[in-house]
Length: 265
Image (cartoon, rainbow, N blue to C red):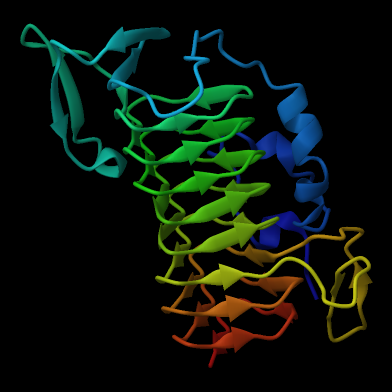
């Protein structure tokens, strides 16, 4: 039985690999997420402090906030690098776009290059959003959200105290509380990762050798690299899915460890 980090995730290119220690259980990264963010070298960007939606589109380029007025924006797929911003015909390489109607609710915020934040997204810091990621209309980031590169936080998706590795996508109507999505994970529409036991207490992780205490009162799910769910799947608290596991639509996943390449129906 191998429940160490490296059996779940390829961390070789992940910008936040320091969150994960070799030989530890993957959920232990959740226990240090707040301290990691407290010590993070946040960029000094003068984000608007006025409560409410942004009245105008903003563009972040080379550490500076620019008014979107007068700039030409091509709203391509950010995850594929086709979001483009031009000023007087000159490409602003790596520019990120926060559309009018985005709500920034305070707390430190780091936005990488080529990021698109759509109107109606609500972002409460601390939050880190990596290069070429999309935060779509109606998304709700509730704080301590770490989103890697080329990720999607989708329409009406709620994320709280969670980690996305690169290319992870929760595109539609999802809930992710106290959870980790590995590289190239994809959540089908309506996927919910439950994170709190009805009976209270720390969430255990069930294994063939007996339960392991996670030490976490709130703990949703761990998805190893390239795992995926079908639409309307639900995971119970303390679910740990190995790499390339598949959860079929409308399935409730039992809590505990599921080996790599599991098919759960």
